[in-house]
Image 1: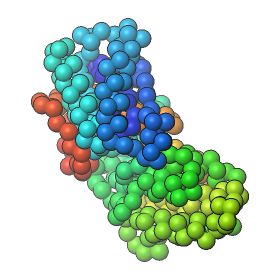
Image 2: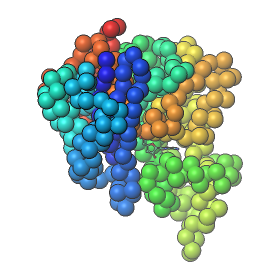
Image 3: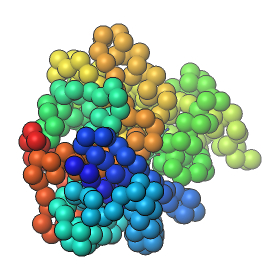
Image 4: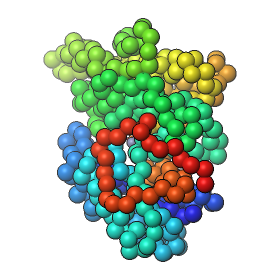
Length: 343
Ligand code: KG4
Ligand code: ZN
């Protein structure tokens, strides 16, 4: 089954072709990051307009480059949520229109299920059951994956998502958007030990997260270290290193606890923050001590992409699921998804 995947939930236009026999055939991504960087964050209306401009030519090129005609496709998958409603509508409308023209089925895919199953695109794919840490700009969740489509929420952020905390902390130090990569880059020149930032909610039981206190702590630290000439370069690097260490340690402690609590031996990291190298390093040390296994997608499939949507869409279309009318769901829970029936 050959499926076209479309991702337009936020500031990346992603398209991909996935074949259930041959795997990922091709994918392409256009990032709007430079456009939004001028505003210090994503401007929803600009995001929607840019998806309108880019999506159709990207699909035409993807098919052309792969020697695939629209009528060769067996289905289309698009992200129907969560995300920015206007941006989601661009993908949903085009997916349904093309499916109508080509006479093929179409299915809406949960963006976070895409992230969650992105490691399945790798040769060394994790077999459920596993614990997944989903860390993106909008979500921080620990999920027990009992099977495909069988997701149990173990814990989540009570306020800011981990990626959002990176983005906001970067803004405080006037570092470019998106904040995660900017902080991570500068942290390499900083000291992880000079400043100690809090590890929120690690001293009490439970698997929920909170990053707003860490945000305030960062703001106060930046204010106290800013002199007449602004924040010194070394001080900035040290704040970045301390902040990154605090987030990574917090996430690692909660993942260790989730493995212990569920008795599961596999851990999956997914979503944009899973691209963070310090986080990967700490998680690798932790799973090694536990004789557990660690999985994550390659870097380009950690952040938003069309491949993960084409993959999940192919599984769901193969299981006989399809979406009748244009629907977008800006907020929807992973645990409400139906189990993916074996094909
Ligand atoms: O999954 P994603 O591409 O989009 C959403 O669905 O939100 O995640 C984007 C988030 C941003 O907050 C960005 O700052 C963060 O992922 N991010 C990182 C890194 N690369 C991206 N955070 C920390 N370290 C990174 N290397
Ligand atoms: Zn995402």
